[in-house]
Length: 122
Image 1: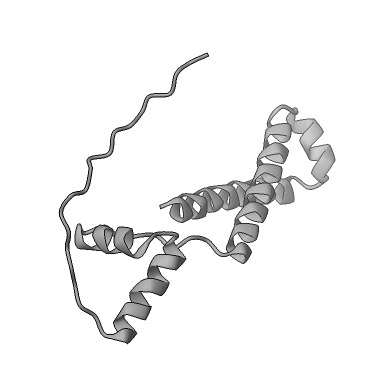
Image 2: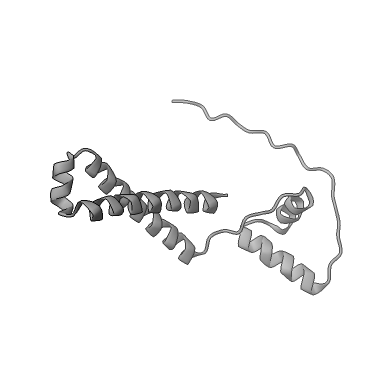
């Protein structure tokens, strides 16, 4: 069994104070909550020039999973077609022009979905 390396986080001993109006405080509090951070962590990240990312909503997570599943299906179909001869593929599609446009469209969709997924990860 491998031992996990313990990552040492420098101890924070200095304190920074800031004053805010109730509206500003509520805005910061809500932003921190949407990012899944404490107010202190959120403020520290912002002060250090970072842009904390918002957590995905349940609906966005569901859409992301659906998108990933659909992409996987298209990749499987494309892979299955790659292993077939041109005659077998023509038989599947029964129209060479349609077949080529379909394969091009699927390839473009997969590339676009890859880009969307990468953008969501950032």
